[in-house]
Length: 64
Image 1 (cartoon, helix red, strand yellow):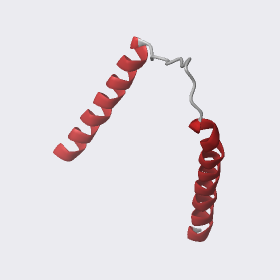
Image 2: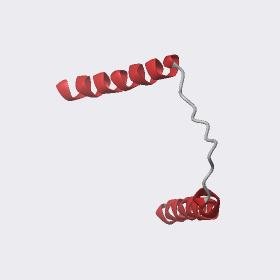
Image 3: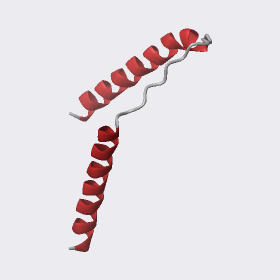
Image 4: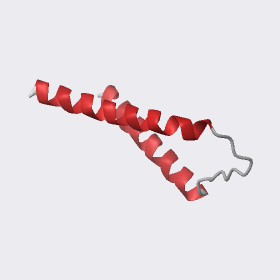
């Protein structure tokens, strides 16, 4: 079981590295017209609420 998990993790890592290095030459090009996306305020509220819930859950578990 452990060897199979290790093989899958290695394959995933190699896939990620291949994707990053394949995109590297394209990333080296510079463009003058760059569009930056900004998340909606609702997304930030949702992420903050989730982080606070996780922190509260962890605090309750350590408290017991």
